[in-house]
Length: 242
Length: 88
Ligand SMILES: Nc1nc2c(ncn2[C@@H]2O[C@H](COP(=O)(O)OP(=O)(O)OP(=O)(O)O)[C@@H](O)[C@H]2O)c(=O)[nH]1
Ligand SMILES: [Mg+2]
Image: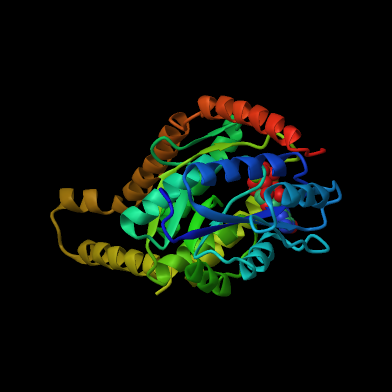
């Protein structure tokens, strides 16, 4: 037991049309946890993906065993926020890792998250693209500008004490995540932002680990005007209410 | 207090300090420097914002190695999963 001690880590993987990516993420996760001798489980929450993600997930369950891979599907696309809540109900670990299943978050960072958590006894460890060796791959100048601009605006308005508010690669103590889920009402990018803001309000501590974010290779990506408008709305709402 | 409230308080404080000073009988050169101060501050903040965002944009890491490594890992994962009987 080199890495984990008595801790168990539940990874929540929400999927919607991730047939290509899911087996690869699961493979990387399993290898990472086994190499570091850490107890883990992977909870896959598939929202009735039309591409047959669920069928692949069932194969993975057979390959890795139903103690390691837990399938908790839902009948239709109900959104990310509720997917986390749904998955969390079935988690048996004392820590929860939230990440995207589209390979933009590499499992290799999880041992660093765990080390960071131990180091400062943090309630939350958040991956950050904006600090140290963190960064992105596959973004054009426009997307980088939007991201940097939005991040700066958020820092000025909310002074949240964490550098990456919209990222969704994080480690939480289970009870902390439960508490935060109760409080947070936003959707989309704003949801991730609200989690950090509320965490600060409740006095939880946050550590940060630089991560490299590799934009999805498989499947559709969407960042449109709509997302930007709803981001700004959400930011202003948090600004005025928290 | 909300973040909005904090901002309003801060602005109110600065604003009233400025108004109070502007109401005093100060020597002409001081007064001339004082009156446009809010505009200067605003412009300075704007420049600071642009410079910060510009600098961070220019120094945003491009993770080439991470992408290459991921491609390598994907290849290994595919091969191993196929060996274990995954049908995609
Ligand atoms: N269960 C479930 N998962 C979802 C839903 N929407 C998105 N996901 C998954 O949540 C993760 C993040 O979603 P993404 O589509 O990658 O969102 P994004 O990273 O903001 O955008 P791009 O990667 O640029 O498309 C992925 O693993 C998706 O498969 C949903 O409604 N339900
Ligand atoms: Mg993504």
